Image 1: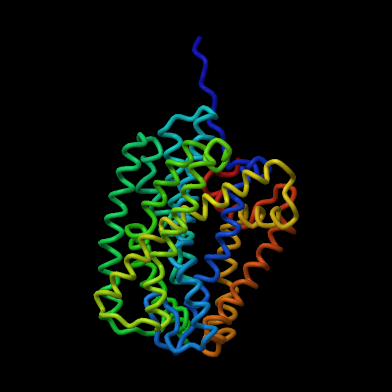
Image 2 (image 1 turned 180 degrees about the vertical axis):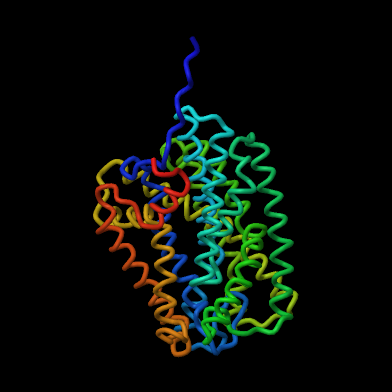
Length: 390
């Protein structure tokens, strides 16, 4: 008599069994996402490559300069690497529960398809710069790399870097030649804003996929196979090298664009486009460096009990999808012309200040509601759609 194989593990990993470092990284990453997005809701000003106002005051220019160096083009690759890392964790758990690779691949693709749908709804209702759609798309297209050998994964990452340079250079040329208007987030007519958000999202999602997400996602897959963030002690040397080298590359590569967008330097258009491309490419190194730094910090924390602040950040990371969407809800309520209307009355510095307060509010909310294993509303819906009721 044949014995039926065990059923694959169903559902996501219980919250109280999740590794510290990935969730801590997601919680901190949401701060970078918030300050990178807030200024996109401002209107009525000429803007540079990264969307910061060119006629702002001294504090606005200082904030823009710091964010260009440390935030813009760095948060998205970090999130992409964490997404790849998490996808491998999810696949490993399903396989360990007895599922075959075709079964697991079906689950991952279903989850990615629903994530793409989340991104569409996010763009339809709130924000044209949605990043969920790009992650859903990459999960649909590149899920097979979870099972490919390391050499194939790293080769594809290098090809992705080359594609990144080509796409971003072309996008930079378009930026300097095309007339600049207000973003959909700043449009006064809500119907027109909705239409333009969807048009923008339909173009930005494949651009994010082709230009910003693929290399970091694949590096995240490679790291997850070695449990670099879950067990950082054996990988301390690697994490230290990535932290130092990646941060140095990101800061050095961001200086030229920072000087341009803060109007300290006014080079030719071709030089400016090259600076924009360099900023974006080195941003991938910066995103990986940030994840590595958090891995090192989490490794030290494992020796003792995390404090209240760390537990709050981890809770925010566990609620990352919910907190990300809540940011957009607050920004629309505060900045949109048909809501709070602050988008026409404040500068980059004030927008970033509001972003920090918004992030802090989501951290507190998650810290208050997450204990006991409670998942965020968006996480609960995505989990139900992916796995069903059980």
